Image (tube, rainbow, N blue to C red):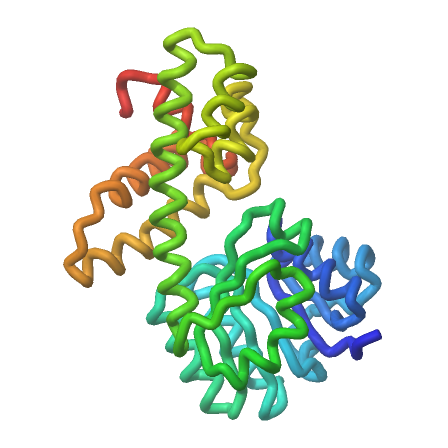
Length: 290
């Protein structure tokens, strides 16, 4: 079995299962999280050390992050920079701006610590099943060191370019996902109003050109108004704000992106931020959007 040398910070709906795959491969030594309760829960579940301070990760050669905002990543990077040995590696699975990824890389480089921005796609199902798509920014040499760890929970690992390229790819991914969500939610709401039975409509759509992951994984639950989170509305709103800022700075027209961002922020404002992104159908079912 591989040597347990990795640490994992961020034990949410995605991070917890990802850490679990590392533990199953014998590669996980320490877990950490902003909420101490999750540290206790997951350290016991995975039978690894639970961190109370950044110093608890000092013996790790590889650290994975799966946290929230840009400032969360940079806060963790600063703390790890003070305790990790030169030559260590930090892999960030969070979704951040390109600028934050590059800044994280610069801050760690000052301590001779390597960095990869490596956001993921595949949702909670992908994390639980170890079938995530990982989009990586950094050097090929550093990625080669990371691959034995990433392969514990990845179906595909793609080197997209230098630091920041992983986050750029994730922005493209989220624009496409959000656009598909908009179309699927609007179409299924229309199908409901037209009186079409879900048990007939969904397999018919999936068999043709309209078939897609979101329709397959969320179509049935959407039409039953079941919105247990695989990926939360609040998280999608955050990701789309990042992507919209990126598109705006480049002078790219982004009406679909802008509409999706408004819709998810509206859902969040209505208290639905913790529901799955498929709760978008709640807006599509009504004539008024406000």
